[in-house]
Image 1: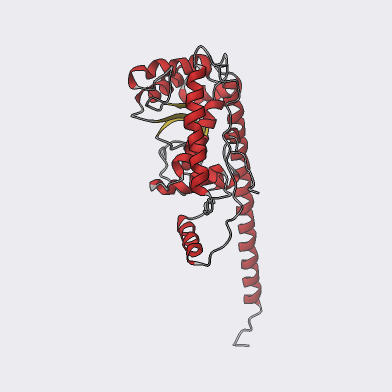
Image 2: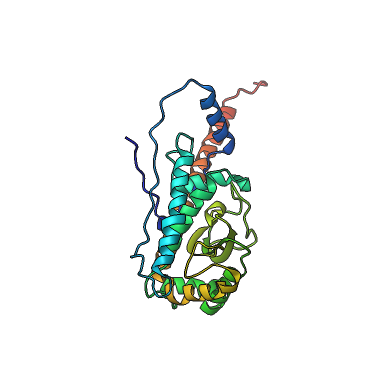
Length: 307
């Protein structure tokens, strides 16, 4: 019987392996796959299956701002298609059994995207998008989230203008994100889009097609889907109506409580990563000190030839 693994909840952001950049190399990925193909035939391995995760509210809960027909079509057809296609793509491959986040990071492949990337990333992005909204949402955040927005953008109003502008000007299909930039400047599997920005700050970034901030080692806390095309009924995400859609999203639907919780999780994960890095450095320093002590001890026991 096939084992079933639910899609990792986007609110959990990304596993520590992804945060540390401990990625499986694509060279090893291809080599292992080729070795298996050259070897003898074996029984199909037990595979993990990703499930279609429903939005965290009834499909009509966002009306009148986003209709039940819109969500039913967007989630029930397109989102479902990504899940079904990914399950077919990864069965029996080296990606089978990996977390959704690890599949995304590995298959991004420094922009030379592997086949599984689009479906895996679209699953994650859509889960994250549905969870970014709530009935009777919108308005203005509070607490630490508001304080960080005001610190990094000058004011909430400045952030709102920047986010809306990014969403309205995204060319073609894609996503706009509010993300916590806390990575080291060297990113293992992608080019850092904001290398000159300071770490530990909120940034607004946009990404084309299925790309998301996980590939840059950023921690997203909010997203809006600015996909173009006929997959939505009450809102066609076209350039002509996009500004109205973005305004509706910001003013009526954003779940600031969810965004705040994601930010706290992001900061906690970054703090944990820093602790692990300090432990690693401390261990390396101790090893180096021990080696130096041994060398000094050996040197002191070498007899002087003149004696």
